[in-house]
Image 1 (spheres, rainbow, N blue to C red):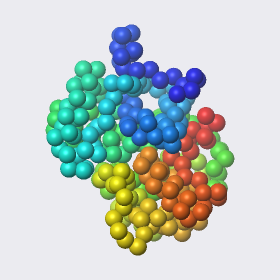
Image 2: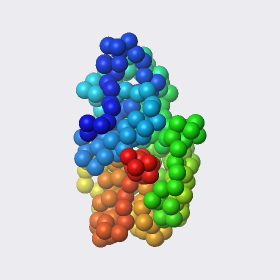
Image 3: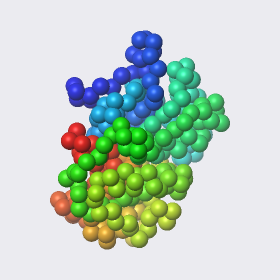
Amino acid sequence: MSEQLIVPTMAEMMAEGKQPDILFWVGSAGSYDDRAKKITKAFVKILNKAQVNFAVLGTEESATGDLAKRSGNEFLFQMQAVMNIEVLNAYEVKRIVTCDPHSFNCLKNEYPGLGGKYEVLHHTQFIKELISSKKLEIKDSDYKGKRITFHDPCYLGRANSEYEAPRDVLKTLNATLLEMKRSKSTALCCGAGGAQMFKEPEKGDKDINELRTEDALKTNPDIIATGCPYCMTMMSDGVKVKEREHDIKVMDVAELIASSQGL
């Protein structure tokens, strides 16, 4: 994190006798992947700008166990989940926001069965909440008139039926929103889900991320917007394969909003 970013930890907050309104769950990608770190920073800038009372777990945060579960290691998933739940419950966490739909789905739908019951929001849902409550005002931005198409992350869209929050946030930029032929409930996966991110793709005519990038390119966009760090990697790679990285940007919704605020 750069010096100007204020990122308190839960341990620091509790030492001062304070309880944050939300816990920002950074996630593995947002913590370690260089490209995803930019999404993390953009979201923190938004939280700071809106004066949100938040904290992170810092070194106490571990992987949610999502990847272990998707790849069939239920034992490892439960070990990771129970460890996280003990930390979250000890801090009496009530509300969690994350930029990672995989963490979002896991925390929201799979942790309750192991004793971890929290209100969990995707960052686009929280940004929409900030805009609706006037804590964040979006004025005319550099994106006015830009052609933007949004790629639906599987674990936000089909798994949790959230299609509107990211689009509602993007609409505040006064950009031209374009829908791919396969979008919302019929959207094609980026190819990274189910732990596929960490293995070679199955044999076929084309990699999934190339097919999905082709869907996006058919809308003739200036920007491909995402709401997931794994989708970011796959779509960015797809744009490079198509040799379009010089004229098409791949950006997270948080990055677009932060940029529109001059952050």
